[in-house]
Amino acid sequence: MTRIVVGPFNRVEGDLELKLDLADGRVSSAYVNSPLFRGFEQLLVGRPALDALGIVPRICGICSVAQSVAAAQALGSAMGIVPTDNGLLARHLIQATENLADHLSHFYLFFMPDFARPAYVDRGWHYAAAERFTAIRGSAAADALPARANFLKLMGFLAGRWPHTLAIQPGGSTRAITAGERVRLLALLREFRSFLERRLFGDQLEAVTALDSAAALAAWSDGRPGDFPHFLAIARDLGLDGMGRAHDRFLSMGAYDQFPAGVWQDGELQAFDPACITEDTRHAWLLDGPACPPSEGETLIDADKADGYTWCKAPRLAGQPAEVGALARQLIAGHPLIVDLVQRQGGSVQARVVARLLELARVVPLMENWVRALQPGAPFCAQGLVPEDGRGIGLTEAARGSLGHWLSVRRGRIERYQIIAPTTWNFSPRDREGVPGPLETALIGLPAGDGAPPTIQHVVRSFDPCMVCTVH
Image 1: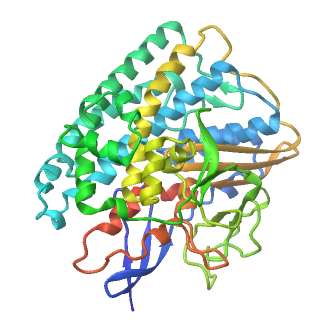
Image 2: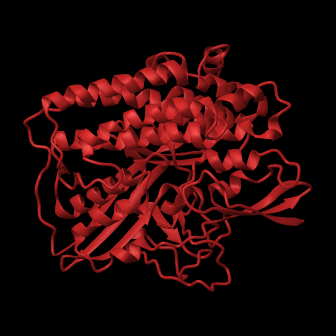
């Protein structure tokens, strides 16, 4: 048996390293290392509770809104505040803008450039893929980056700035929208819709959303112009539908009051109970102890720990690992295309990418409806006071999956603050029972080492890792 180290990865937010044990040129076991400790949870302890709204978004520069939403929810539950109708719509719009911009960036800038690699030069589709998706020089970047920049102009109206807005509050949003601004928001959404329909899908968003099976997806994409059909042709040739399967246990904490919370396991939808979440530190460079709920958790360093190989904790749901992300959201929401893909393929590379792009098609029309539902002149934010003592929990969905914040306040200051980010779930290490996390499982059996195709990269990027969130 041979051990190799893969990393650092480029086109990844933060640092990532893989240790792979190989047998006959294939991965027999994998160990995922998040090598950069940051310690935001400890930074928050002892501070006034509302300081979380200014500090927590700085965990990450590309999903700061999701961190803001989770913090606002945790504070709001401790304060007993219910956001106003306008405030909730504004929060959905701000968060959806960030999540969809993230989906677009992932597809065009992080995932597709791997198919322009020289390793695929003998494939019939390689020349067109290299022309379109080569990093920086490909024509796709010149199309997608302006579309993304124009789409993010929504943030100026809705949040004042991005990243690290302070507009999101426990009671809603501090940024009230006028009637004139509502018209501008709809115009920006129409422009973004036009780009998606013209360049990404080659069809109307509603037609993409209506696809209800793997067979319908294949028939729809055959010969169709657009970058999504281009990906599907590559995926068929490389067998990405049979690559990167993990435990097939999926978790979503619910998004936008449209996609429900739930757990998918053994082909069945189950209720989600946040009380079933625990964190295991056996193989993290953190003080060891019994697995415990995040509301009781600590983040205490033990850098010389013999069993440690990462700074990432191992979150578990009822004692089991779970995969999170757009695939989990759309599966638990019951979209027939995603249900069919998972029933046929499990959680594959292709299924994860299809789910992210499906969300672009599904959420833009929702955003159009949310903008129309805004009521200029009505309140956007409810007011309240932080209790002297209390607890709160904030559960939401970032682009990469389920995000949870657990807060306790004592004498008006933060006593404990624990965070489980999406990549913490997906890139978790083994737990004390020796059960590997989703990525560690998804890599088993893949070719690796000298002369191997870049399949390891495809699987890793299908989860779209954000390592700075993982080690927050």
